[in-house]
Image (cartoon, rainbow, N blue to C red):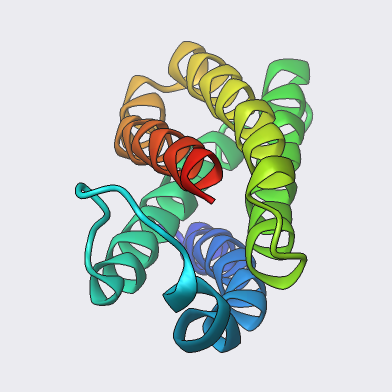
Length: 158
């Protein structure tokens, strides 16, 4: 791997992990307080599971971004794919703010619906440029699909 590609990979992963870190700033304080008081469906995972799952997903996202970025920012399809990915990353972080900081499962549900569409668009765009990059987003789409259902049930139960 060229040294330039090495730094692109590191930066890509760090940007994605940073979105997770920013989201955790809103999430962590609410888990033992507000979140603990919510009624949750029986399929709600244990709290300890979320951090390793999200960390893994953000790393996979970063690798996917790297695979697209190294195709060259001068290509229109690369720029478009990365722009859509950036928007979904913003909606990902916004979800944590809406759900945990704003204590609004409803607005978080609206956000996650938009997020899901943006992830799907990112996956399709990435897949057209680099199939491996698209495949790396499949676990993310699946997890957010599950998180959407979970968000819906928390909204309905509370």
